[in-house]
Amino acid sequence: METRQNGSVETAPALCYDSTVNEEARQIVDRMGLQPLPIEGGYFARTWTGRPAGPGMRETGSAILFLITPEDRSSLHRIQTDEIWHFYSGDPVEHIQLDPGDGSARRTLLGSALIAGHFPQLVVHGGVWQAARTWRASRGWSLLGCTLAPAWDDGEFELADPLALAREFPAWSRWLEDMKPLPPD
Image (cartoon, rainbow, N blue to C red; front, side):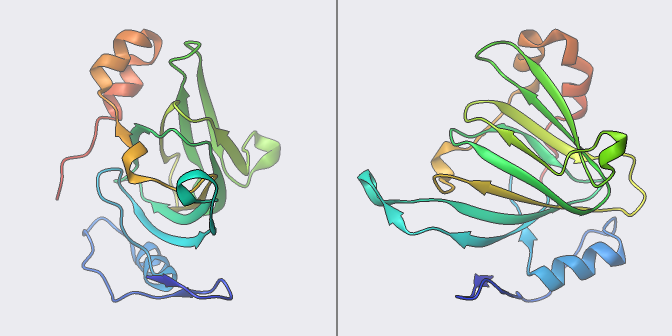
């Protein structure tokens, strides 16, 4: 998948899908040129990368489209860069943040029903554990975006140990058990 100068997405070759991905989600994945996101889960495509700048010439930012289904999710992880999540379409998303710095926990529903308490975007600060999954699924997919500044760096990604986090956040232990990393295909 490649991003063109004008911001449009060049589609990638068709994928072989898991049988649980519904037809509408498959069409979105194909149309947006999304590819499976290893380790974290879901499907993604990088849509923007900023120009290199500053010490080390790291790109100034990056953005992706990200699709999850009820059978998939964004596994519990953290990165060291601040990240903004954007809700675009589909089922609402339950997003959890666990902050080891101050011991706080935050649950946010990303979605389009603003009067019902959904939010169209949220910020996750670097170093905060996070995970997301579709919530009360009816369409069978959720399309999101994530923007980082500075840009994504593979070396910053850390997958969580849910059992260790359950000791640190005991009130969330049942939720953490549900969010164990999915086995690889």
